[in-house]
Image 1 (cartoon, rainbow, N blue to C red):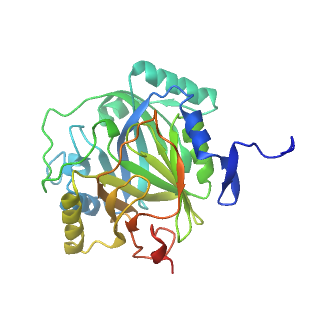
Image 2 (cartoon, rainbow, N blue to C red):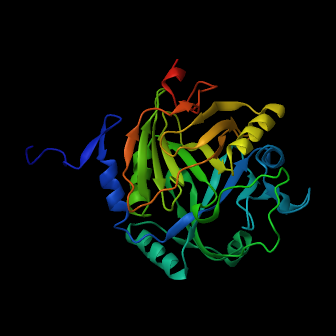
Image 3 (tube, rainbow, N blue to C red):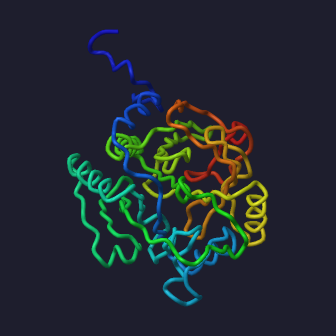
Length: 332
């Protein structure tokens, strides 16, 4: 290879040259990782009350407050004070992402690293910290036009979590689940989360209907955030809520049918994170994945790879930019 050839550590993805997945994984852990997990999400929707009712009646979230109170729009999955904060917006999508950082020193290190890379970092006000129920929070304008917050010292709820539907969610050291964002500039977001935020590139998936997904993690969950190339616009593709077992997924599927919630993809099992799941369209327009049995990642032995299909299922229900298709038989 000549001296002016492309770096030998690069390869082609979607017709473009990007770092090899295994090389990207190595680079991410050269950064001292202070971010531990996905802590909370802001949900914007034209119909906040409808989204809250859907989350409680179909997913199984627990509202913090009684009906009609402002706290009704804060939804719990576990011992955290809330994981979803639902608010009014002209269009549906994630309005903010909150990442939990290990401790105050880790937050200082992350803020300094962001500023070193030219990111304008803002200190969260006392009112904002009280709203998030954290000791300290900083924020910046993140990829895909989503406000991104880093926080430490979250105040856990003294009240036990009790799902109105008896659902147990898988959270703990893996955080609340994952969020997938779509963008025509997905690779820029991947670079930022790998090289600045310190995430690993868990793997890459090319789907039969088109679109390349880049999965990124910061803890034993296979991915806490992912980015998909979108031909249209930036926005939210889907959010995962992982539950305790396959039967709980099946019951959620039954509830979706009973409540006439549109499906995005049928039941299936992913080849990369092994999640047994289905996808449904929330009232805000983006998808919710309910799944179980996701694999845990050991960074000491993990190798990033490229996938082109799921193990089975996940047949697309709708065509279009947001339709998910994980198996070859779904191509139309």
